[in-house]
Image (cartoon, one colour):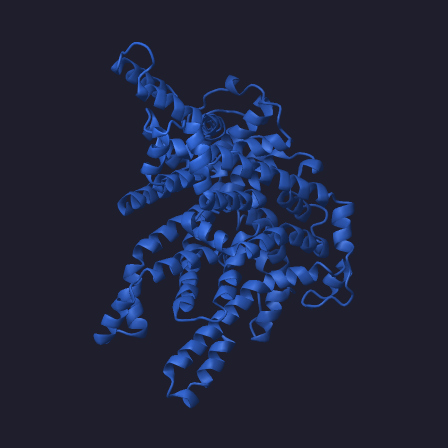
Amino acid sequence: MTATTLALAETLTERPRQGRPPRRVRRTLMAWSFALPFVVLFLVFGAGPVLASLAFSFSDLRARDVRSPFSVNFVGLENYIDIFSDATFVRAIGNTIYFVVIGIPLTMALGLLVAVGLNAGINKLKGVFRVSYFAPFVTSIIAVAVVWRYLYQEDGLLNALLGVVGIPGPDWLNDPAWAMPALIIMAVWRNIGLPMVIFLAGLQNIPKELYEAGEVDGARGFTAFRTITLPLLRPTTLVVAVLLSIGYLQFFEEPFVMTNGGPLDATVSIGLYAYEQFGFGNYGVASAASYVLVIFIVALGLLQFRLFRSRT
Amino acid sequence: MAALIVAGATQPTRRRAPIRVSRLVTYGVLIVGAVLMLLPFIWMLLGSFKDNAEIIANSTAWLPQVWTFENYARLIGGLNFTTAFANSVIVAGACVLGNLVFCSMAGYALAKIDFAGRNALFVLVLGMLMIPAIATFVPLFVLVTNLGLSNSLPGMILPYLVTPLGVFLMRQFIGELPDSLLEAARLDGAGEWRIFAQIVLPLSKPPLATLAILTFLAQWNNFLWPLVVAQTEDRYTLPVALALYSVGQNGTNYGLLLAGAVIVVVPILALFLFLQRQFIEGVASTGIK
């Protein structure tokens, strides 16, 4: 707000005229009156808390201080040192990276596969396919997690289906080695619709003539896909990767419902860790943990900002 | 996989039409995939009509042996899912309204009025686009508590009444409207408010629809913040109620939980089927959940 006041003052001194205020000042006042409700709510409930969260992360704020948040002590990096020396938090970072690094390429590859299929001159059922693959993306992760927790039981439907093809399924959610893969499979299922629709739009922008020209040079089928489609989809791929990363980095609801971070911390995530610290009343520690996540996301946000700028 | 094998087996007999074979394979793979996508929903729906004894006795059967509405009756009667449903509708509805009104106003100013502080505001909006709820829930909780709004619906709504995404979306669209249109109205003596209400808003129906859908979707499924704010059952939204029942004493009552999942999922799926184009294009244009 101070920047705005300064700018306003500048325009005021710029054109000292008598009578009605100069046009630029009137315009600025008018614009701010349009933006005012948004700006107030946005500063109080959006931008302000981002800074407050950073400040909290350097303080010893606890649940009992909730009525007097300004009376807490500055503790420097203590909260950060605490969480990074907590094996559970280090595990949470590892799990979050595991979820992102395995989950995203899988989601993108399958989404691309479906998009290529839908783009391959299919006319019948195209709408049905689009709706089927996209539907999970609009549903609540909580509801989906409740359903999948049941599917993943040792004697559940998934293992029964695997049994049909002779594979003995694990006790997915109670096996430290299989709990993360189980959450990743569910996330891939739920999110496949996002890369599908964005890739489909990207594919439709590739001119048909390129494939015809490629065919003359003997590039067809997979060769054409590798030499024409994939390079031209590179910008789309980056956008999809960044968008999915932001969603996947925050993963919290899946372990909340399905595993509570277990077994043996195998599915604890940064988000879940921050929420649990909040539940214990350690607000400073919770803020520090959530800020670690912010750093991950800001790094990705900067990447996207660069992409956005280079596209326009 | 089965479809792949079947389609592959037909290949020798149709050697003359390779295009048709590859199309068959494509259809086969897409159909198998689509069935896999829909199976959990069908399973959820069928399971919600089974009583718990049946679910425990046989966790792989599809159709209920005895169809029962008992799970729904318990959710609606004893467990307050009607209140949670109403809370979800109120929170999502209020956020939709707030975003439509306030974000279109701010979006108009950012797009069409040249004013001091414009760039700073827009950069701030862009910078906040990617900040997740987890980054701010602790100070927001402290703030809302001190405002006396903890465990209340206004406390749930206020932080989401406007979103940077909403402003970004509206600014991008309104920016595309021809300046000549607005200049003509200005020359005719129309004030900015009249131009906004009578020219810009009527022309902005597509982005307003997109914004309404995205906001409703995000709020209907929102979990972390309602979970933090709600402290008593009468303040739960649907995802909060379902999640807390599923980790609480009803955690093994799968019939009941599946019925709860149906109540959370069906309204948004119905809306999606009805407005699929807007959903898909809206999400594709922003990529934000």
